[in-house]
Length: 405
Image (cartoon, rainbow, N blue to C red):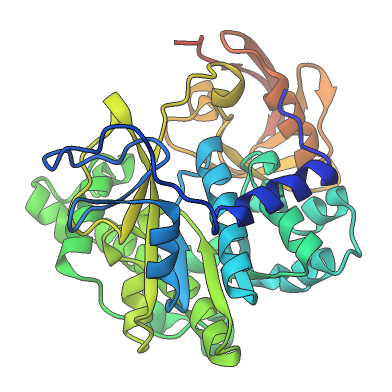
């Protein structure tokens, strides 16, 4: 079971990370060959020039940026450690920063403010932000950043919107949503053709691509309502986060906004950076964690300003536990499933959206934390019995956790 370090350890980590600014990162190892297009572990690579950088050189390149985008794969622990390092260093370098977070819809901004002010316990913070219903990933992955913000009185900025609004825009378009329901998100800039191509590659492998029975060819499906709605949703999602960042930049011109968000919103400048550029904000740095060594997939020249080489995870079972794959909301009887992820353990078990989760392993479920704790303790290769209520009937399902590879 993962353990959250004490405040004393976090302070040591912060000091160590800030100290990176002054460290000499020259290494005795053999320099990367010119033809090598992958970053070395612990080193930065500029994909556009295939230039290897140390940390000090990277920070010099970021000194005039108003926005720094830090991508992630949400469930990868190493990505979050890397983000913590970057936020710490950027804070030490710039003094005044805000941490913008995809994990939070803007309606919970007052709760983020109360957390930073020291008014909430960790449990209160997770419950009041609806963490398990809205985001659902293990909070241990993100708590270092939250603790850092609280310890150093750094503003945490909720830059997302409720998923229901994203779905509504995807279905009917931004123009169809009443002004009062848009959560102050402005009209998105049209996506680039390259971004649409990228989204199509994702969509065509998704079950939704087969839901339009009137289309048969890829060409027709691409013009169909399902894919067009998917593009609208993703573009609006990018715009919502870009608007939150842009507002912060305008209101605090001396502040650097460090955004923590999924890599898909960062890569190639197609997502959030594109929406920021349409608003005249171009001093944006984009950074991505990148698998180094044998597992490296060569980055494209334009994927980001720089990528950081991360060693493959060899920790096995503990840091690669599978997720159940549901988002939930709480009511007086249990947990209502609001969303089931495609190809997840929950989906394979037969759990559906709107199911009421009553028990897991014979333990009554009252909060999202109850479910998360059970799933986190579930060893690989075992089965978790889940009791649900559907259409007034109680049904038993078995969530099968795959064995360790």
